[in-house]
Image 1 (cartoon, helix red, strand yellow):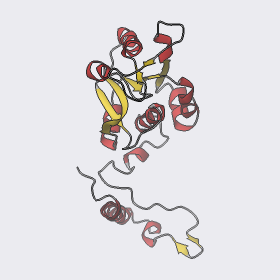
Image 2 (cartoon, one colour):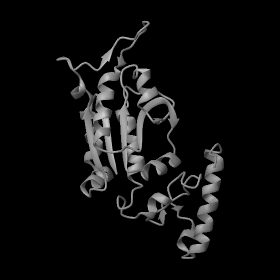
Image 3 (tube, helix red, strand yellow):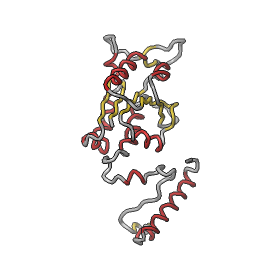
Image 4 (tube, helix red, strand yellow):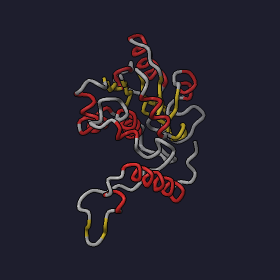
Length: 224
């Protein structure tokens, strides 16, 4: 998968991709990541990418021209399956969305900043808008990193144990069941006997029951 991220703050995105699973995915060439500085697509010496709102109002707005130039340049080089804008009023990110995007070949992610982008960007250049929650961040860079993490870990070969991602919370519209490791007894807090029994059908049944119980107690709003 190729991921192109368009941002006003490219340095903010470097760290997440230089460690752990995200770095591994790049090193193994499972992910082809490119971060584009939006200021490289401006005409003036000040590298201006924002301006005042028409009609007045507080906050600057990201201009359409540099965004359009960047996206169009990328599109002349290859086909993109989605052009995603990270926005607090986009569709709330969930596991189904991550699963679907992880199957694509090429995506562009646009990081918003300031008050947001000129509406014409959203009307004519964007194919999908995604939010990571009902709150506002300074910019879309951290949200883009979250989206990338959620989809990259699903790509075959990224995780050492590929079945791990399939048993994560939300994959079956259920939260994950409780998990334990050594020691078996710590301060009198014991691992459930069923997990030590070696009876795998019984263990799977227990895990399913606990997953349903956790979902009903914590997130009963999860829907199919």
